Length: 179
Image (tube, rainbow, N blue to C red):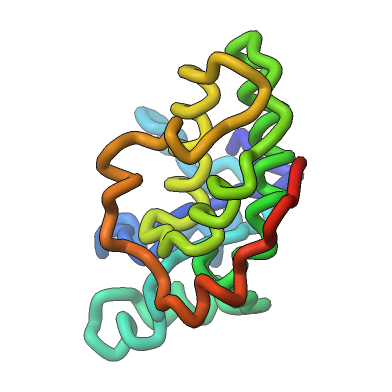
């Protein structure tokens, strides 16, 4: 109801339990909601954007996702590759997040050391952009100057086996890049 006239973003839609899927399908088909404790439906007009890291068609085949809901949501499908396949986006994401974190924590971080950028570009990012954002936020919180260094990484991340192949590593290193 709060999204009436706008857009609602449903993240990880593939994790939704079957009962909630049925309720959401009803809302999308009838274009109305019923407040908790009420019996009177309220008309809504919302655009729905949904995201998942699952293949929903496979989930439909396994009866893990409602077929009708899939087709109701799959009007326009976009595929966004994982961050590990978009290393060139890391400097852009850094610039985006660093502004937020500097404001939030009263910091003035403006740069990534080249060896840290190389690490970021070669890391597998199993948690995708959320993981990158959280790693960066933690580094900014603890930052003591304007440049983040590889030594500022947590020990578990520095020693992580989640690295791309050497072939990808050699292709993605951009020496001397400062942001």
